[in-house]
Length: 113
Image (cartoon, rainbow, N blue to C red; front, side, top):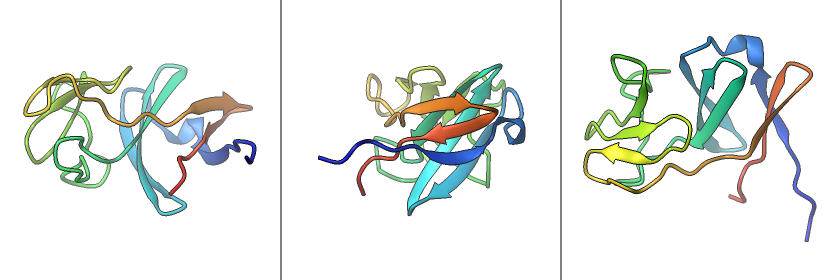
């Protein structure tokens, strides 16, 4: 078994507070949402249909910027846990990606492809 390794997603300063941004790392689509000094990262895939969440680049949040929103069906997911609270998949969750911040850099541990 190999040890888990983290890779750099981006400097934290490149994530505006209260915004979302999409990334591609090692062939996997990710969404990162910053809330103050916390960053939440999920696989960019709706659990309902397995499609990407955004309708335009980096457009992941609802109008009030309180929830992650799937562009296809309007499902709403909490930012801090990725749990669906409205739409066609209540109770299901986005796949969280282990994340940590070190020396101003956001690091993620990607799942095996």
